[in-house]
Length: 190
Image (cartoon, rainbow, N blue to C red; front, side):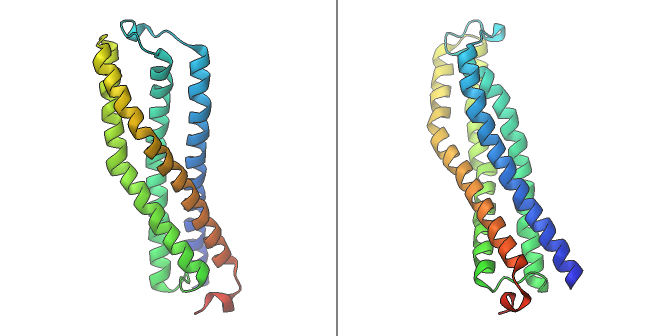
């Protein structure tokens, strides 16, 4: 059981750490990319007929790719963390009956649910608004582009909240998991 516990705990904590790291990196990258692109104020030849802010399209194009990669990485990581916790809990390799075990389980489940909701529901809706915005801007249909941009921006606060919450939950799950994994054996048993 010792090797199975070590392997499951290691994979579990690595997945949570990577989920937290990627989520933080995406947020930091966005916080750098948008102001930098705004200050550069590029004029994009592909959007020459669009009278709106080209820097938003430039930064958004880069960040949309980064968010897509981040979404896939966090989805795989959080599902791996959930799966290793479930397998460990069922087999007894990971004790989930302690206070830290319960807190870790709750944080992992909430994080997995949030990432899945973001991946399945929010990102497709946001991507649809972005595609409409960029396609309309490319042909100079400024009214449609601006309406789609407004629709996207109305989703941004919720997306930011979900990103920050994913980060907090993955860090909490990691901390509770590490505390539970490092606890003396007598503290991990019910």
